[in-house]
Image (cartoon, rainbow, N blue to C red):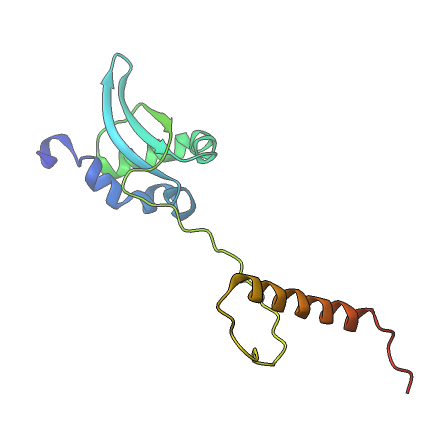
Length: 137
């Protein structure tokens, strides 16, 4: 069937990076061919603002698709939405900065009240030490 009708969308997906380039391929993917009165259209799913970029480069993309597939595609139909089968990269979370005093706690109390009092005492000591004027030696 591929010899008679040309490659399908799955083969086009494999070469999508070569057709549109790596930046756009990360944000888009071909979905299907759609026949209509105006000829064949390639439906492309794009995530977010990539739709406008694909629209701007539609002439070059259509030429590259026709060169690869061997069948004329008259237009691109761009659908915005989440890409199927692709997960978005996890956002990097900032590392938590924990200030340590270099001293181990003297005793670990089991009650929440005792832990709260220890924490408040440490904060008080930190505030007092940061408020004191520097030594003039």
